[in-house]
Length: 134
Length: 134
Length: 134
Image (tube, rainbow over all chains, first blue to last red; front, side, top):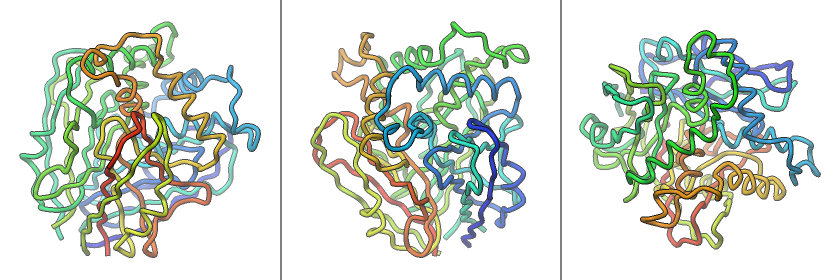
């Protein structure tokens, strides 16, 4: 049994952007079987598992904009003009804990792991990968 | 310290269905103390912990339908007519990482672990249980 | 490699309350490197990671109230008058699985771990911390 930690660095180019990080995670997995915590170190982003289909990614952006409406005035915008980015992150969540098998993420056929940028563009977004297993 | 992986297979019978998998998970736990990743291998489903009360389960279905409205036209529906199922799954999340103690899930009195079917009925839905502990 | 379990007890004083438990978690971390499951044993609460800024915390309360509307009549309210508390908990989630490094949570600069009370005030809310690592 062992524990290993690795990091993914991401540069984003739009305000809302969904980036498939599945293959980058698989390259950095350093155990054969176990669990991996995938955690974004930013409170205006999220880690989510779903299907990588371009139409669906647009629907996700639309739905998040709809759920956290721009019709209201938010208090955090007095400090930093990104309250809606934080609120979307709060709804989605910053970590997933997934199975590793044969040295790779054990996902279903239609699943990808996404880093969701909610307040871009940004340089050097960091995702921490912590693996425990053998 | 050890790692063990097990699977639950589920057949669902309705489009939206909340299935309590707590006792199935407990039967398959193979460590005494540690953590368990409970992960659904499908991007139109979710894993959630809450109370198993029949009225509440109806409220959950109503709320999810309300949050992801059927008044909009979604792009993913041009490919596969289940955009709202994916969007609900995106909001909820596909994994939970829970404590194991004395060989069982260490839940509170009113908590159950649910597999949430968001695009049923389906055969052979798979939930992966990965345990790390001793 | 080892597994350690610890508990945080929390008394809340309002119906909706966001409590920063980052420093309490750090005091109870008993491994150097690994992962920690942070789990609330209650189905009317949540564990979320975000920024501890007082305006944002008000925006979060407003947004959750807005998402789970009080305009509807919920079935669970016939049993126990807290359907909206459960529904908010269902949306947010009861666990996070985070990285530990140098004996502490390895969070980003603007991140805190919150216990979110959704049905207070309550005595003796319990958060379970389960660590696996070395």
